[in-house]
Length: 281
Image 1 (tube, rainbow, N blue to C red):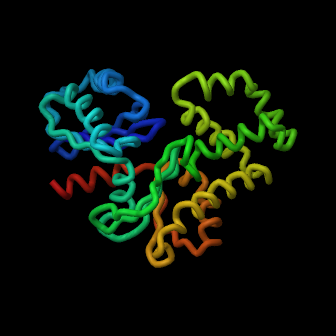
Image 2 (cartoon, rainbow, N blue to C red):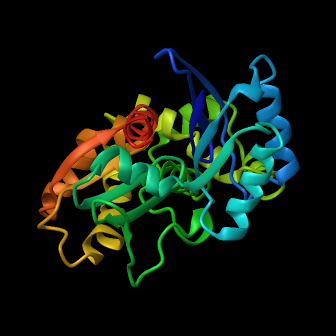
């Protein structure tokens, strides 16, 4: 039996696959070693798999947001090893997962637009080094992400820079300054909280104010990230993530403006990752 996992900051998708072509999918909270301790990850994974015969798991392939350095990967690996004691554990960055899931063995740009954002140039076998540093998180980066959209929405709400009808809708939902400050500055998971407002944006996206917010968010991602690759007009640009998926019409419109050729947009890479590992045992 093997397990393939893809974790963002908000949620983690898991597929448990046995040798009889049977699989089971579960979902947990997302695990990010920059925000969660080794003990926290171990505790929640153990609880999620308490009804499984974990000793029968032969390999775990984990792709996660924040698993970008050897130190952070080791944190996740140790947590998983303490749960799946008989398994070979592999931990990689979620950016590699997006590249494998969308590009496969072809060259292309692979982008993540979910709670956070990231981008890489995939050679067909590995990530090509880039001069700029992307994936800086929600304070310094995450352009184009759900967090970026939510941050702009909340900023406009507090600065009274949005149409009154949108502001009133948010007030009816219970939004107020004290709640925002508490969620953003005194509790963990501020990025997830801010990204949660993409649901409101999507449900009301026909409003011109929100259309403009969405387009500006994607415009910033394209200009700050995609256009920094010298060959961006020559290779396809692919996207993974809930934000790219639900706002794909708006994303394609912005990409067209810059002659960026989008080839693939998928909500989550987990199924493609499983196929990849089954075909590369």
